[in-house]
Structure formats: C-alpha cells, structure tokens
Image (cartoon, rainbow, N blue to C red; front, side, top):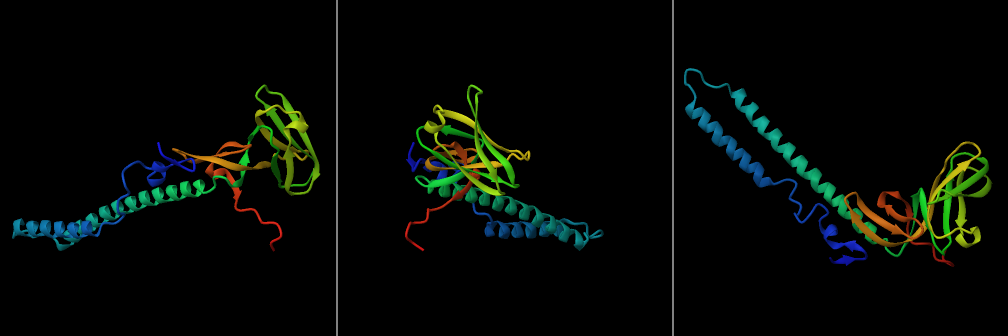
Length: 226
C-alpha cells in the first residue's frame, strides 16, 4: 500500500472509496426531464376524453412534482460531494502537519524519555491547581502548580525528575475551587493515519489523537525576527 507522509494515498484521492465523485447538477438531466414531460403531456392530450378534457392545472402540478423530485436529487448529490471534498481537504491538511508541532486536547499522555510541555485552561482563579497522573496499575502521582489566575497555566512533565516510568498515563487537572480544567499538550506529529472517523495523528507524548482535537498548530516564531 503506497503512503505519502504516513497518509494512505488512496484515502486522500477518495475517502468514500474508489468511486469518483459525480457532478452535483447535470444540466442534461434537466433537459431530459423536460423532454419526458412534454412527451407525456402530448400523450395525455392525444388520448384524453374529448367530452372530459383534463384541467390544465393538473399538467402544471405534474411538472411541479417532477421538478421537486429532481431538485431533491441534485441537492443530495451536492451534499454528498461537499462532504467528500471537506473530508479530503481535512486529510490533506493533516498530512501537511507531519513533522510539525501541534497542541492537542488530551485526557491521557504517553511518557518516555522526553519532557512534555502542556497547559491547564482555568476558567476561575484558584488557591491550588493540581495535575493528576494515573498509571496503568492505578497508582496516582500528583503535581502541584500552586495558586493560579484564570487562563492558561503552563506546566512540564519531566519523567526522570518526577520518577515516573515510561508508559501511558491518564491525566486530569483539578482546582481547590472544584473546577476540572481541560488539558492541552504540545508534541510533534510523527504520522497521520486515515480512519473511518477521519484523520488520526500520532503526536509524540499524546499518542493517537483525532484531527478534531487539535487546538493549535502553525510554524513557531523565529528568534530575532519582529
């Protein structure tokens, strides 16, 4: 299977399968519909009872019904093609993030030898903010960030300094005000995989993360430039 930057090229070319997208609106179909209607109308007029001619409004109602059906078909086709286009653009965007650093919302992290940078997003001030890590054995490790003002609160996870073994950990934040703020971590995208739910990024320190959980990405500012 051919991959480009860790992305399945078949999925980029057509997420919905090998079938290429069809045109949303086919003008020849509309012309054919009109020709069919005229043919049917002519046949009805030719074969109607002269003593009980059909009401002209009935022809208009028939044409209106045919037009509505065709409009619904075109709308469904247009919606389908728009979804395919959006999915392809999302996959291409995710592919371009390989090798770049992104910030993602997480509820678990994977510790190794590297230091992980993150932030807690507080809505309210606190006298004490805690970051709690729970390993696969259920053992909890608490990191105190002290009192904090509302807004983002930066922190770093240094496995060696904290004495934490490599592996997956559940992570959550809590304040003494009873708030459970969201947590984001920064990491480099090593690979992008395509799934039925959309692109999934392998982010160093965060593991497999769906594309929609990205909260920030972009080139870092270069030192010395204003």
